Image (cartoon, rainbow, N blue to C red; front, side, top):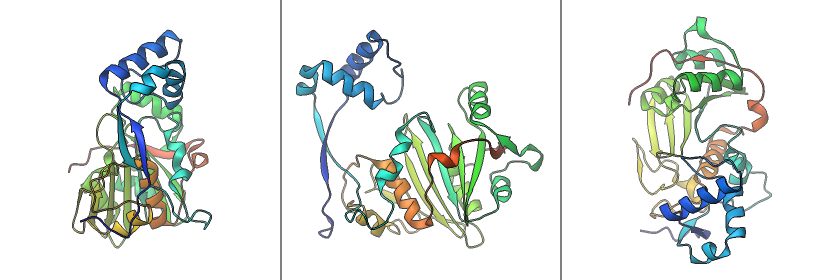
Length: 274
């Protein structure tokens, strides 16, 4: 039943039907703009389209969603807005997995990701992008950045950190691992593992459906974001909310500056299953 202690912040959003999406694509191309053929259309293009076509804005179907937010801003706590940068596709692209691991040894994390020691080296964004093109978008490279007692594994166009087998390996021996995966053409995912077990896992866009050995483990965090874990609400800003939740658990915050320049990494020699 609904949680009476949670008062979600509800917002109205336009539903992008196939016809509306087609109109935005055609209009954007006619304006000489770069419009993705697949995946989400950049918000700047959408805003410009509706400014030029107010009739389309007035007639568009709408849906009610819940916007995750910190109810006591200014208390120093990380908020979803601190992770709004992940929507800038120039940083991580439309598909990525970020895995926060409670372990300070970057080489050890790469080893647990099945990167062979001889394959570890410094990788730039250009190196990663070239490999993505060469593998037709499979993204088998992982890079790491140290943040104190935690290490963040970064996969562009990759999802190995989300595999339960990987999370069990990354969190073994009393550690923790939390993976956030953005997949614009599939389902986003947040998974939390501790001491070799996947505790809870869910799509942060629809957090009412959770699995794992203790699916409700992060419910109090969801409530603090104004999300009712007992409801079937759709979340308006699921990925910033998920990353904000990760920061609360880990005590670290990832910024675009951490991703600048070459980072240690390598090729995942064999994919994880499950």
